[in-house]
Image 1 (cartoon, rainbow, N blue to C red):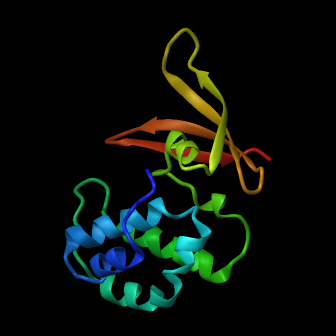
Image 2: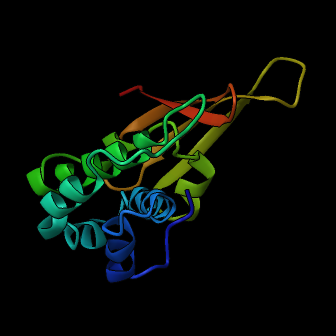
Image 3: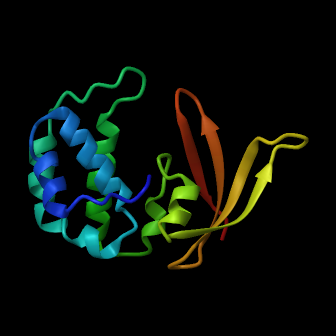
Amino acid sequence: MIKSTKTTMEILQNILSHDTHKVWEASCNIISLGQDNERMKEFIPYLEDIRTNTRGLNMGGLIVPNQRFIDKAIEIIEFYKKDTGCSCCLLGEDSNPSHEEKNGNMIIQDIIHIENSNYIDYYIVNCMKCNKKYKVFEREYHYLWWEWIPIN
């Protein structure tokens, strides 16, 4: 995801609103900030409020439940509350390697194509903070997603 430009207070107002669309959007905003140490620390005091106000909402999602966005946002805030390790371990299916590179979090070292085609098989990506390498597979089902596999 491209890094959100919304303020922490705008995101908090939306995620605490009980309006499912606003909650979904705010969850996506938090996920997009998942590699920004300073911004993420601003959400820690509100973790329990976020957890309480999003519990039991019917977020919908026909094939893949939209609750996963709230769960991921809470997971990211919990990670920063514990303050252990590099945040690159949080990258997951919604983390586009190209966006992470644009956001300054990762460097794409190589793009491997499927033999005799222009289709991407996987990326070799390096974390800018801890230098950990990942093999990132581009996957598709009902939407495009990425599988991040640590290789060192």
